[in-house]
Length: 279
Image 1 (spheres, rainbow, N blue to C red):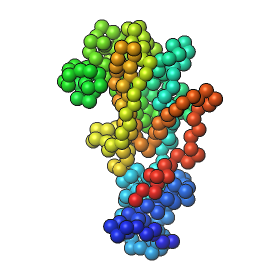
Image 2 (spheres, rainbow, N blue to C red):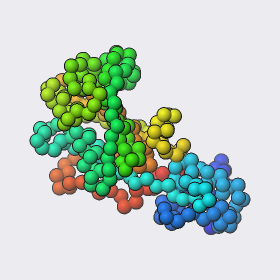
Image 3 (cartoon, rainbow, N blue to C red):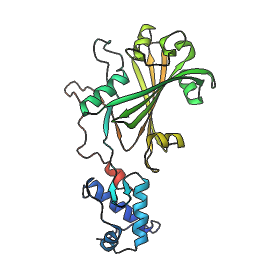
């Protein structure tokens, strides 16, 4: 077995790590069996022990592998949950309004046979520049943030924060430090602010220290950040920022008429081939 050729600037351990990613993506290794020990990988590739160790370190830092003291090195796999980030609300809600996020997450967890739990809190904070701009406020104005920390089978899954103008939330259950029966959407509907459309912005970034501590991911695992601005007939209603650990979440979007398809099929292999082949 040889290491694939790379550019002159690509160190040997990085090319070895790339080939190990390929073998992982192709299913050569399983979660219930340890990877070959360093001496075996050294023999397979004809490289020095330090090269093997550095390559494995790369995959550990990416969150693909985990070293278990006295047992060996194993694949570190998190079950991946598809989240349908699109779609109309279910009856009896109006046909043209958006689906309630909490109801969507609960349905998806049930379909996957997983247990969804949520920790909730409400805060009054100063609006970040980007949030203020999307809500049509001045930076630093007071806003109400309703945060949900979602866990699947007790494993951190997502951090969702809904940002509201203080004037919209004042005197409503949105100011309560507990979840609202029927979801925030019920409060908005009662206020005549039913959400009928949204614009999503998706970015990937590395987690900050507090995020990394909560998600408990590898030091090289990025976050997917979905920022959704919802609208009714009068303008923006709220900004929902949701952060997911990229190794355990997949956002699914539908385009066009999906009347003949109830769900979008998921790939048979949850490993992203592009990510697996990355140098």
